[in-house]
Length: 113
Length: 114
Image 1 (cartoon, chains in turn orange, red):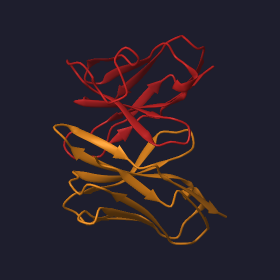
Image 2: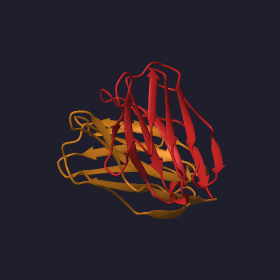
Image 3: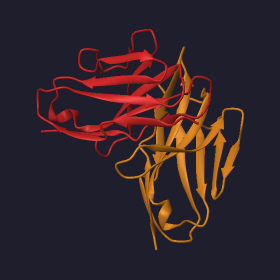
């Protein structure tokens, strides 16, 4: 059974720091991996999608890497800003006769001004 | 990309009543998903809704409690039946992935059951 774990569960950093959020999954047979952002009480916003054949994706200050064989992904946020404060969710998409998304519990990030 | 709207955005309901949540997508999609996010928790898939067929429910979720309609390729409803305080959650509608593309989410419906 695929399980997704995110470390740390919560993180508080001063503005300007570079930071890394970690995601691990137990079964390397994934179709792709997606990072989302969720603001309090809101829906999810897609940040980056990495296909299983890719090793990384970049968007602005965000860089996500994927090491499928070791079951790991990282989300790197450069020069963090208070507006980055949110919960970041990692999700793997598996294909078991139909696509299904398995979510991690998320990392709650607080960037202090 | 897909733009998804949900109604209502939030509601407060009495125990024993039912609430129907609507999900509208701005483009035709094959698969629509309904998720629940309980307070402080991550997302749990309730069911997958394909147009023209019965919804497929995940373990722990049943049709009598969460009936789903999918009348066309842009719309779906989820009903939370005979509600109890344990049903207090955010309910999220989503589309994709059906071919490895990005998954998109609606803004969610915040439900509080008293």
